[in-house]
Length: 66
Image (tube, rainbow, N blue to C red; front, side, top):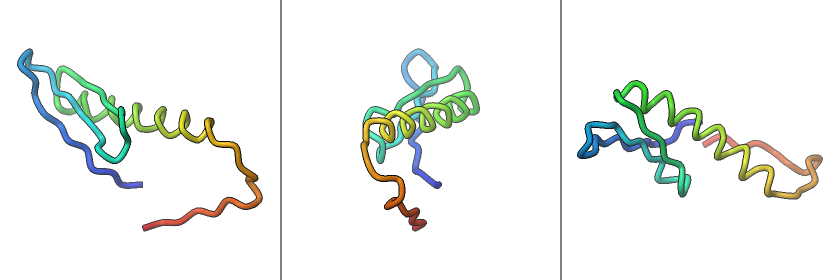
């Protein structure tokens, strides 16, 4: 999966990462590399939580790549 991530440095010098396609999916780090590593974990967690909120018949689920 590929997602766009916006990384900006805040006024305290931390790097803040946000995924616009995933509302509320944010993270930060002391370096840009740390922020990127942290946002990857945040994305995984975000997807797990959202999937757990859905009740569906797994036999009818298909994967689509775009």
